[in-house]
Length: 67
Image 1: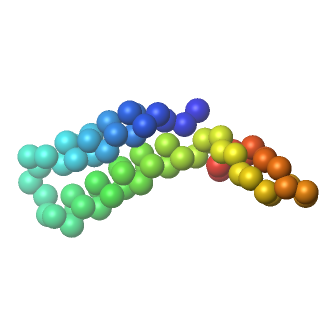
Image 2: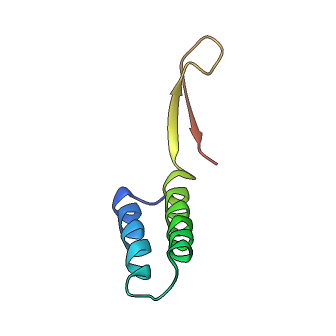
Image 3: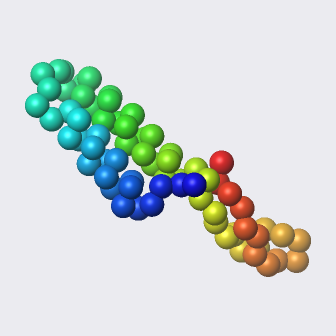
């Protein structure tokens, strides 16, 4: 089951908080923050149900899962 919007927000906040007060180079911190945010977005998007209009023969709506 994909994360909720609130869970996504919390994971993004955690990504920044985890790097606070650490003595590292900016590039190291940036890389880790980017990875954590990418993982959070993936958890929010992958597995989510979506409806797409006009993808079946003759039109109509199809429901699918983002993978």
